[in-house]
Length: 320
Image 1 (cartoon, rainbow, N blue to C red):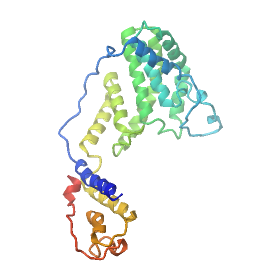
Image 2 (cartoon, rainbow, N blue to C red; image 1 turned 90 degrees about the vertical axis):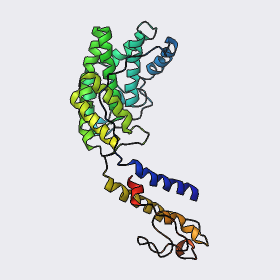
Image 3 (spheres, helix red, strand yellow; image 1 turned 45 degrees about the vertical axis):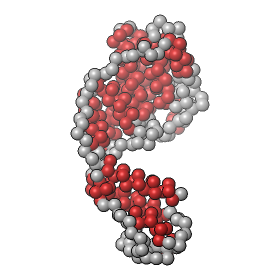
Image 4 (cartoon, one colour; image 1 turned 180 degrees about the horizontal axis):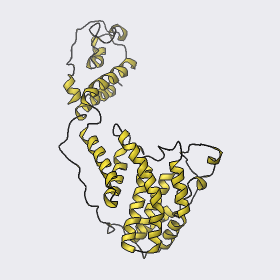
């Protein structure tokens, strides 16, 4: 236990050197990569298509992230979000439709393509998109599917636009045009949110910001959404440079966090000052030497005072 906590505290000490350190790199718009399908054969594409086709219109089981504003909001998923109600949750349905669009565009002669096109036609109707946009804009849903699901929605819009350029058929044009109002609603949601984003989210879950911002940047670069792109790049650059939190605030935050952790830890009782070693790392010292804590040595079973000293990290260690 002691070893694990010491490793955790060491990670906190060294993490400080990563915050607030300016980087000498700039982000600049790059052309989108062309569509590559050489590594995906028809058989593999068909397996992926079957996965999406099996779920995009399968309503249950379903996980709703749904806020109720009135009695009318008590409805099944197919009524609330009539385009993206399958695949267990909204964002999975969205990127399921993206997958079908990508595969149908990449393999126009494949046996699964007519079924994929039919599924897209069934979902992406004008009426469905109007309802989807109304749902997204409703009161109390500012954080709905933000940022992960909204970013995938933009990728679906981009895929349809790219498909429209290559096929130039009324079918694809209709799908792309139908989706535009929902795309714009998603963009407006993200434009309101991005200026409020004070720090990168690195949770490794759907709320993680880097992946979603990458998808959104790709969309903005390839659709001419210049204002949206500028906002995304400015926010991404500030996160990369570490300017989200001033250096002067990092060290106090880390120090406070470490002190709170060790104030709650119940260390094994020892008969030597070695029991206080972790607290020494935390500037808590041993015995009566700590200016921030009451005497902790006696509480931990320490029989000597100030008999063992260890280097205390300087503020430079914390701020880099």
